[in-house]
Image: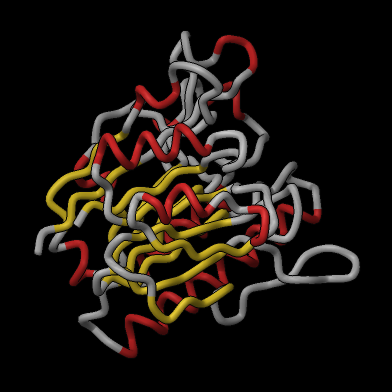
Length: 263
């Protein structure tokens, strides 16, 4: 099975690119983040015409996640247990969607950005990650052979070499010790970050800002990552970062990451 994750940065603006990607790669399951549309606005017809099923959650022009699968979508779950809320009035954002696809429990995750270290959104981000860790730990405790993939835009660069210049990020989100500790806590719960295992090279990025010629200068960040349970990690045979998707007409600022899963 081929499982991909991609922060599409508006599915309605990039439907053609997403469809072309699926046709070119033959990906079986595509987890999308930052779809930026309500469920009824999602352009599902094109994906269904290619033989895919679609599950989405989205409320407005912000956030939004989806799972697109040609190997089935079962037991769709919007939000993980204990997922914190945000806003006034407080409500669960469209940042997590789970579904079982081809025997794998896929979670499409769009981790909160955090904004600034002193911003309330930063505390929300850390709480969100802590609740995700608790949920993930519970899934593995309930079934040691669970096939769970936590895929998406984590908005965290776990290593200094996951950004083009760590000095540039001093005092900013995405690289703070607390965020990195929250990310590492998923590993401590028993999961393996499989993209690092199969793509260990330093300064290998999945995101480049649209501003200041970041992509031509290769001034990027590695923030699109995948945690897998032990049983699933053992089946991952390769990972590719589709850098060319950052090129061409109207690209997302992120690129897809594809996992090859045996069996």
